[in-house]
Length: 546
Ligand code: ME8
Image (cartoon, rainbow, N blue to C red):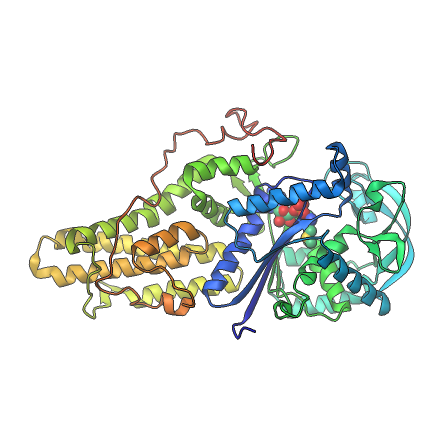
């Protein structure tokens, strides 16, 4: 058992009928950065991702490809694993809803809810959206002319004998919880949206589907434990993954999750149905459900019909040209964390890359290590007790950035946390420009001052690299190594970020450029977005491994 406080972060589990794309990578990347930050901060972290496999469309896709549903699921779950490996994600587990460890526990939760009467048998008449595998309310159906609000496909009126979850019984408790915990649903705009809908009234929701034994798609899923003529609705099955994965003696300390990261499309399930099911199970509620917005591309929504999805081949082309950490950086800092969508545009990618990385941390590191090489033979100079110089109180400046980053991570402001590292780098640039150490170097009498300046620069950059480490693990580890400051196992953020960690005399190596400057005139590495007038680009169906 660890005495360190637990931190549990999750991503949605992704449908295996599709290939991984930027959206899946993005949510998982944000979770990865949060997990890495928390590990650095000394927390006992569990980071979970995985795949959602019991959707009917898995069976139809499998049939189209002439394989069995589980073969299709295996193949695509593997594609997700590989994609997440390529992105450098550090998840602690990858759950698949077809695994026995999940299925057994889901049956247990359903039994428990039936025993308390929170799940009961009844009749349901409603508008079914076959393309999304969900019912939509009468109001939504009417508003959208009885077409799917997501895909525009015809809705179907369905009557079903079903098992229901007594959602209505939890409306007041859920509202009270949301009110008492302002950080529970984030960002604020999403919370207001959800609260508005809850206030219109919660109705009980079906949690099962009757099985038509002659239909393979209908048979696919977990059966209701006491009634094999029904299977558990895929969304209910899927939500339980967050709990089932850690519902073991070795992992129970991780519940409740600190952060469920999701996209705005699946907010209702996570903000309403899931918490109410947990209340019914008498389990604690997650600390935060954070629903980010969407990536769009070159100003247009990404869709299968436009064929403009940023899929793995596209991401791989960017990684090939600019490096994995540059791609991670762009997604993390320019992504749709708030309530507005974010545009993936090539010109912006190059602009941010040059500003933050090539001309930012990369240039600052090479400038400072160059001068230490030239004036001090590559050995870190001794500041001789000076910490404050030319209007810069360095321990205070660096301390504020480190503390700011941690505080922002705690409040799920991931992009803001990373900006602290960039801000610290800019302070170093400003300091070098103001003090002009290359001029001071010409005056032997000012050698101590020169040493102090370069120490301050190198030490501030070491701390900046630490703050950027969760976003860019490979490059920042490389940079810290060059500054003889690779974090050792067991060292916590507090120790590492404290001013003075860099030892005078330690080797400061210049090495290759961390982020070579990018040419803004060069065409996008994948040929550009289809339909954006820049060439054919990635065609629909271009799969992973192309
Ligand atoms: O909904 N921009 O899975 P899914 C940003 N299996 N993120 C995006 C995105 C975009 N354009 N497109 C997708 C499911 N995402 C269910 C979840 S959880 C118990 C079950 C991301 O494969 C975003 O996180 O359709 C979104 O919520 C998720 O992918 C949907 O993935």
